[in-house]
Length: 167
Image (cartoon, rainbow, N blue to C red; front, side, top):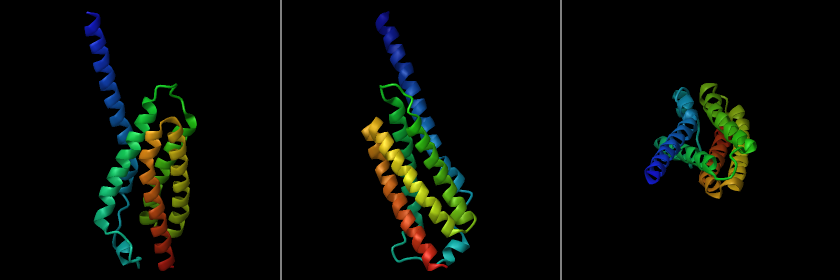
């Protein structure tokens, strides 16, 4: 009987962990959902772009993988065995999500590359803070965010060039 109860507890715990994983991944995809309201259009197509601009089709798959890693990283921090409260880490995670969501609105929605450039610099710093804080709590979680940090850095360089080439 005791073995059956332990097995039931483990099953419930596993389902709860999977539900939490789904929740963190869904939260991580919120900026993408918001970003779909501000897609590149004729204005973006008409901009002068550097030769190293990736093809448009690449952004969707890259961001999809990055949002997945953002969600999994948060879940790993949530699952850590030590006491769960980590207000600085969770605050940085929330800030970077909000800044991530705002960039599409500033760049594509308002068509303000200079403002978007300032915002993406803040986003990069927020992602860096999240990497450091998550790494301290769960190194694998911090490591999962390193490609995101790199991509945001690349996106910032592209944003800068788009601003520079299109005064």
